[in-house]
Length: 76
Image (cartoon, rainbow, N blue to C red; front, top):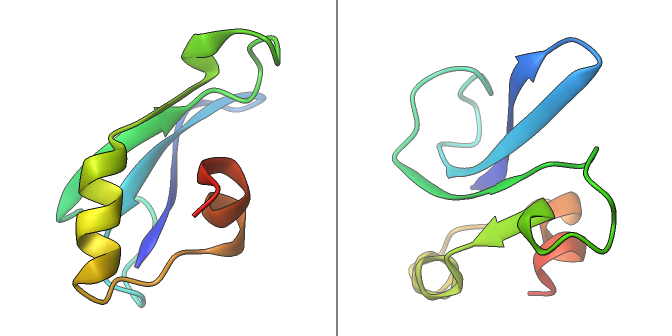
């Protein structure tokens, strides 16, 4: 499953876009890091969302599911 894993301090969260098993904890180990997302940056900032689109499409073709939030961000 491709989902967001929180990192950073409280009230200053940023997220990694990771590939992990569905039932694993969000802060646990990951199989792959596919990008990162900083929601606190200005919406026009290009560094707000960085995704390796080739890896995401590869894992989706291998059967990985995507959470609703990732689907909205990446437009899969």
